[in-house]
Length: 174
Image (cartoon, rainbow, N blue to C red; front, side, top):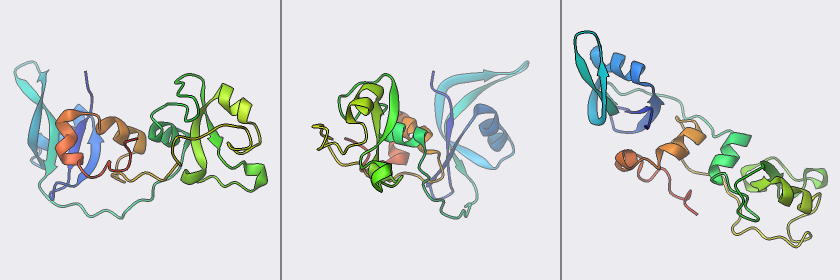
């Protein structure tokens, strides 16, 4: 069962993914309207309420544009929890493509998801020096900056939210 409710700004810009309790409070206080319902029902002692899947706020919220911070979780999510050298999905770690001890920086363009075996094989060398190859160069993702990147990556996979997140996940498909 999918959890989380997509919250849209008044202009239909994705703002957040919140829990059922927060979503129901927004609706019952009249601060948001339901754009789409899920198949779930919330039962109280006296009544039943359909659980929303997508909410739209009644007023436009102005928020400063946050920056996308690099983190281990974000790099793993960007690379779909798959080793970028061999395709393994177990024992994952992060690899600096150009090693840090040789001046490599901790940036989106220099970090990839890597399994422990490939990371040890590559060691303190570049992929070409180690005889390994990346299928595509790593890059900074474009996404909805108000939603945490790993949550956003799971959100774009939900078909009922695709029309609201359309255009934000471009460049993430591999």
